[in-house]
Length: 355
Image 1 (cartoon, one colour):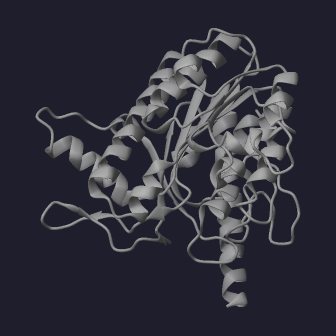
Image 2 (image 1 turned 30 degrees about the vertical axis):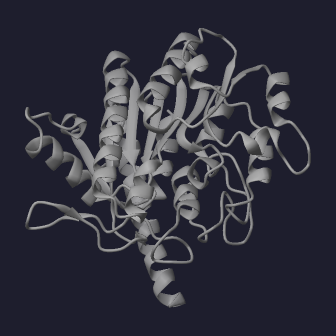
């Protein structure tokens, strides 16, 4: 087993090197590096989920409405196995997408030896880019946490919240308020953020009216309002007009739960929310040349597919080891085509950010 794992790791190392070299050559020829990067992750979104969205739009509506995927010309697929399993969880999958390194299931932002890994979001901030995280789950959940936290167990939410205060990302939107102001250690992390210059709200109704220059911290359950939250984040980043651009990480987290529960109509709804988010970010990229959008998933959930009767169905209530889609739009999109491992996605983003 160890020999087999080493073999596959060697193969993917070679493939990654060739792909990144090709990406570098393409970028140097084009001389166009993205100023802004939008990294959109659909938790649990495999090809079955994407097929469900496309077929729902094509067949089951009074008027044909093509999915936003129709706008995307550069597509690839990614393997998702972790360091400890052929089937990843969100902690290891998120860490791979955030840092470009494999880790064990359940681990966030650390490699299997316990060494700290640095995410592309943190690196973007160090380069002077504006940064943000917008998710419709707890901002402490495994996938977003992988972009800033380092914990051996994904459910160490108090510690993850504390580690978020160590960073100064410009826009933060997600759930999980109780781990900031109702903590066992009695600390009020909201005050920590305010002292760092953040404007805070636990109400979307309030936050959506903001016209502020301060950094933004919104801790509330966004749910299906994710497209509007992303619009708000982009509005802030656009107003900031950082000459170095920005890096925005977004997660549509609710696809995963519908897969775990085998909810067909729920899956259709959440994929339509994902489609709406894609419209927001693709429209932004069209209006702001120099913006790269990369869309992928941490893993597939539910073994979703469409049966001969035309109905979506599931084959499990857990995650699967299926490859997941990779969609790219904008300058540098050509770097994300073909078969790749999930760790290659942040590696290619790093390559593009270095120009």
